[in-house]
Image (tube, rainbow, N blue to C red; front, side, top):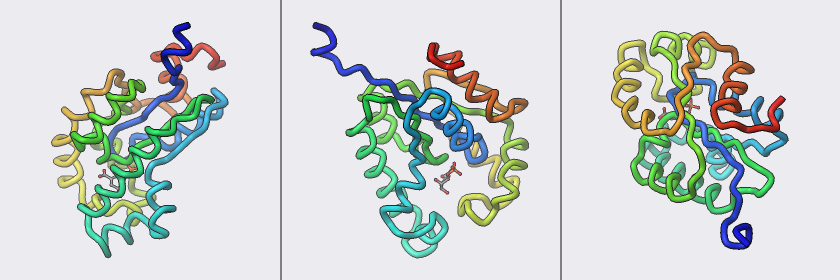
Length: 181
Ligand code: S3P
């Protein structure tokens, strides 16, 4: 009877700053669970037919945030029964309207954390792909200004000393995703 009243949602949302490993660990987790994987930035780029740096450069950050929010709400409105791991871009969860929409669907949110130095180091190989990555000081300040927002996630995993596979395993353990092996 309960099944007819409540839809069983098997999904996880990964949040955190640039370089946290949301996409890499999220893909691994989805593979291991046999769930779908969605990277919100990929969805935004597909909809726009442009890269993230192109959207920022030609339309500005405010436009990017609007599209990000619309894409997020579309994904939340059609969560697959088969399970979804959704990786958000670093700024998505700290927009209050997005956090409210996420909390309304009741999907567990996992904050992938690391020190600012470690995150900055991890971002260096793909510098040109992140418009909000300017220099180490600005990066740290932005991280610190967002951290309280990330901390509202139900679960925090410190990824500083972990490989992406270990991060995926930690998420599964913390959320008791039993089929993970
Ligand atoms: C952003 C992070 C990026 C991307 C965009 C803005 C941010 O995603 O959404 O460049 O505001 O922190 P990643 O966290 O996957 O790098």
